[in-house]
Amino acid sequence: MSDREAHVHTAQGKFGQHISVGPHELCADEPVDLGGDDRGPSPHELLLSALGACTSMTVRMYAERKGWPVTAVDVKLTHEKSKRPTADGGPERTVTLLRRRVHLEGDLTDEQRTRLLEIANKCPVHKTLTGSIEIPTELA
Image 1 (cartoon, helix red, strand yellow):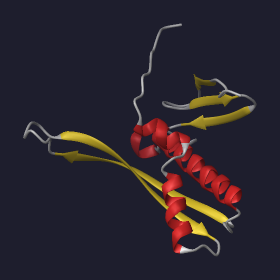
Image 2 (tube, rainbow, N blue to C red):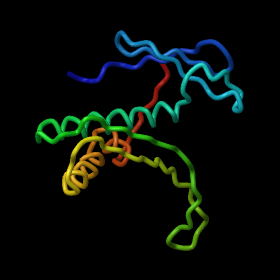
Image 3 (spheres, one colour):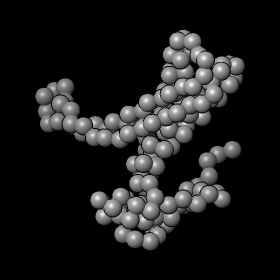
């Protein structure tokens, strides 16, 4: 089964967006301090949510397959931008940092915890974000 198409359409307010994916309805907006009405997560918050959900699902699936006693996975994420010098001494470049903290609940050994952290870095959304991405865009 392939991913369903996401459809995003202008909604209420300055930045409000209505999102539909299959039978699911969501909304996106910007916080009030950025001129929005805060009717939903911002686009970056939705991105963080996708990474967090995928991380948790992947870790749970792996632990279940191994028969490891994971009772819950808690993933917290933040997004920030940081200026970094370039290796050749040229102008600084902006780097996007998606910080992720994974908390595992269950009676796990240190080795199991270490392996599950490795698995977190193999979730499909993580691979997408750290891989080569192309976004062909056209007018409809």
